[in-house]
Amino acid sequence: MTTNTAPIAPAKNTTRKHSSKIPVQGGGQFLVEDAPTTEIFTAEDWDEEQLMLAQTVEDFFIQEVHSIGIEKAAQMEASKDLPLILEVFHRAAELGLCGTAIEERFGGMDLDFNTGLRIGESLALGFSFATTIGAQTSIGSLPIVYYGTEEQKAKYLPGIASGEIKASYCLTEPSAGSDANSGKTKATLSTDGNHYLINGQKMWITNGGFADLFIVFAKIEDDERLSAFLVEKVFGGITIGKEEKKLGIKASSTTQVFFENCPVPLDNLLGTRGGGFKIALNILNTGRIKLCASSIGGCKFAVGKGIEYAKQRIQFDKPISDFGAIKHKIGEIIMQTHVTESALYRIGKNIDIKQGEFENQGISKSEAKLKAIREYAIECAILKVVGSEVLDYAIDEVLQIHGGMGYAVETGIEMGYRDARITRIYEGTNEINRMLSVAELTKRALKTKEVDLMGAGKKIPMYLLGQMLPFRSTDEQKIIANFKKVFLLISGAAGKKLGKKMVDEQEIVMNLSDILATSFIAESAYLRAKKVAKQTGIDKTNANIQWKIVQLYLYESLEKVRKFGKDAINSYADGIEKKMMLYALNLLLPKYDINPKEWRRAIADYGIEKNQYPF
Ligand SMILES: Cc1cc2nc3c(=O)[nH]c(=O)nc-3n(C[C@H](O)[C@H](O)[C@H](O)COP(=O)(O)OP(=O)(O)OC[C@H]3O[C@@H](n4cnc5c(N)ncnc54)[C@H](O)[C@@H]3O)c2cc1C
Image (cartoon, rainbow, N blue to C red; front, side, top):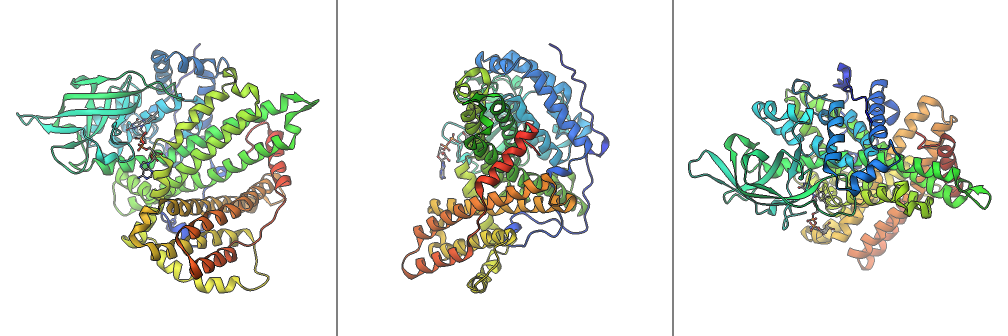
C-alpha cells in the first residue's frame, strides 16, 4: 500500500502573531480573578489552514494504520514488529510530522504552540504509534529546541525533523521514577579531560529499541543536581535491553538502556551543568499539555466508534443507541470531552500570546516559549490529570457500549482500552501532578507572590455574609466563582492549621487539587459556551447543546466539589471550626437543579445525529 506523503506545508502564517494590548491572564490567576475580560480561544476558532493540517494528519493515520480495519495497528502491536513501526515512522516523517515544533531553518514547520496541540489531538488516530511520534516530537527533541546551542541545534534538529535521527529521552531509572532527581547515573570527566564518561542504567525508555540519540540525565561527579547530555548511539558504551512486555502501547518501543563508560564530547552537555533537572521539568510541562491533546483526540475517536456501533447494533428490535442507558454513556463522554477541550485550547492559545508578550520584552523566541509554558505549569498539570482520566473513562464506556465485541481484538476497542491506561502513569503520575498543581500555586502565592491567594482569601468572610441572604442567585457564573472560593476557603484554613505539615497530608492536597481542577475546567467550558452563544445565538443547536454541557458539568461538579470539600474539612478540622467550615461550604454550594437525564439525552442525540463527536 502506498500513501501520498507529500510534506504538509503550512503557509507562513502558522507562526501566527499574537498581539493584544491587554495582557493575557497569567498562570494560576484564574483562581483569584474573575473570568478574563478578553474572550478565550475556543475550538470554534481554528482557521482553515489549521483544520486542513489536522485533517491531513488524520487522513494519514486512517490510511496507514486503519487501512485494513485495525489490523495494521494490531499487527504492529502483536508482532513487536519494529521494522513495521519504523516504516510508518518514516512515512510520518516524510509528511513533516517529526518537525512540527522545529524551526523552519532546521527543516521543521515551527508551528505555533496551539496548532501543535491540535496536531497532537489528531495523532491519537495512530493508536499507540502516536507514542512513538510523540516521543520524537516532544521529549526527544524539545530539550534541544529550547536549550540547545546553535551548534547543537544545527547538528541534531535537521535529522530529527527528517526522521533520520530517532530520538529518546532518558530520565527514569530503576530506583528513580517519580523522584527523578534521585537518579544514580553518573558522568565523570575522562582522565584526558576531553569528554565525559557516562555510567548507569535508564528504564522505560520510549523509542529505546531504535533510537540514534538519547537525551540522558545524569549527575556530573558528586553534583546534587542532574545535568543533561546529548548522547549518540555511535559513541559506544550503550547496550539496549529487551523490549518490555507491556499492557498496552505496544506499537511503541520501550526498553532499558545501559551506559558503560559511554564517551560523550564536552560540547554535548545540554544547557548548564546542574541545569538538567530544570530542563526535565520544563519539558514535562510541555509533555503534560500535549498528553491532554492526544487524550482528547482519543476520546473523540472512541465516542465516534461508540456512536457508530450503537446505531447499527440491534437488540430487542431497536438500535441500542435508542436506550437511555447507552445515551447516558454517549452524552457523558461528549460532555467530559468538550469541557476538557475548552480548557486545553484556552491555555494552548494563552501560551502563544504569553510567548509574544515575552518576545516583545526582548526575550529570545525559544526562551520566550519556555517561559510561557512554564507560566502555565499549574494548568498543564491539571490538564494532564483531567485529560488522562477522561480518556480512561471514555474508552471504558465505549468498550461497554460494544458489549462482547468490545472485548474482542477485532474491533480495536480493547487495544484502545489498554493503550489509554498509560496516560495516568507517564509524564508524571496523576498523583504527582495533582500535588504539583497545588504546590506550584502555593509557591506562587507565598514565594514569588505572583498569585494573590491571601488577598482573595481575605475577602471570603464578607462574601459568605452575602451568601446568607435569602434568594441569592445561583447562575452558572456564580457557581463557578463559588467553586474557586471553596478552594480558597479550605486551602487557607487548612494551611493555617497545618502549616508546613500540609505537604504530608496528601489526601487533603488531592481534594484541593480536584476542586482547583474543577473550577478551571468549569470556567473554561462556561467561557466557551458564552462566546459561541454570543456569536451564533443561544437558540442555535450547537450553542444550545454547549450550554447544556456546561449546565450538566456544573450539576455533576457541584456534588463532587461538596464531597472533596467535606473530605478535606473532616480530615483536618474538628469541633466548632469543623461545624463552621461545613456550614460555609454549603453556603457556597447552593442547590442547582437541571434534568440530568434530558440534558444527557439531548447531548447524546446531537452526537448520534452527527454520527460522531459533534463539535
Ligand atoms: C510505557 C512507558 C513509557 C515510558 N517512557 C519513558 C521515557 O521515554 N523516558 C523516561 O524517562 N521515562 C519514561 N517512563 C517512565 C515514567 O515516566 C515513570 O514510570 C513514571 O514517572 C512513574 O515512575 P515509576 O514507574 O518509578 O513509579 P513510582 O515513582 O515508583 O510510583 C509508584 C506509585 O507511587 C506513587 N508515588 C510516588 N511518589 C509519590 C509521592 N511523593 N507521593 C505520593 N505518591 C507517590 C505514584 O503516583 C505511583 O502511583 C515510561 C514509563 C512507561 C510505563
